[in-house]
Image 1 (cartoon, rainbow, N blue to C red):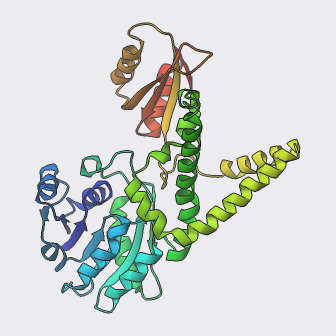
Image 2 (image 1 turned 135 degrees about the vertical axis):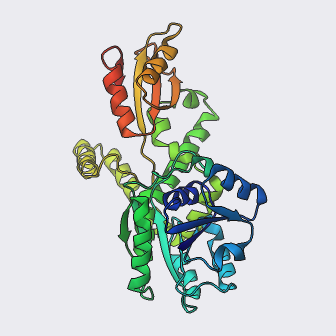
Image 3 (image 1 turned 180 degrees about the vertical axis):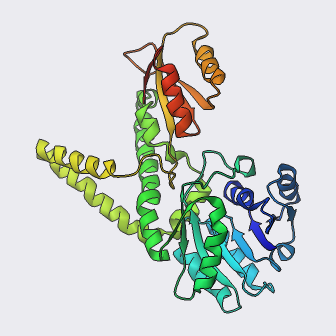
Length: 362
């Protein structure tokens, strides 16, 4: 049997564990330095067994997954370097930056161990082992970042194991990964935070900014609510890439400043046109590093029981409603409900069910 050790059995680590657990050829071990976490892993059944001993978890493992925050990865690599790891052991991680950890991981390569950087590009609005699910990575991209020192045999073994996640496995060099993910994930997070803080500043003089910043503004800036400590580590780790990206972004905003100063309507149309064409080529609803939303809006009359009625209809049809929110800031209708679902299938079924009796829009 192959032993898989998972360090940090939270959302990502726990979901990996559930993908592997129950396979007759695999044993899944969870590690935490907290006894309470070890007990939780066992109680929830996400691993075959768990331990607070790093040595016990790692030393006879065939695969080690480091599912810890980016800022702690180097520390764990150093700790593993002090152990007598099994010859042929493959160590990988799940961090969203790769160049620095791959460089750090090379310290293990000369000891009969292979370090291969990894980044499953999927997540959830929830965190912790309680949110772990075996379908988290299904149809998502799982990026591996082998380098020149990585043997084909080790890479093939890791790919074969990751088949159990049902993800699309993609290999790319670590530097290219950080540039791409910096552009499509890290930079948007910075922009969202900067935009929200800009509006927060205006709101100190006029509270209507906060009152009216509902609907679309809240939706396009939702990633500004991401975990501050996690993003502190990610942005600092990828700062070289991000400094270049921010300068490019600054040039783009300066371009719009010039367009508006010159009142160039044709240029505005062209910018929206080319952006729309590129965005239209992107695959819809594929799992990605920034979570997709499965939401619709329902215009409702202001009378007792309407929210319960809609929720009951969805429940009777066995459609899983994950969240419901009342949006009051609309001039043209008495009220709007924002309904959130976990999957595209649930959203599609809700649209079919509710559209005949309610005004529903995406």
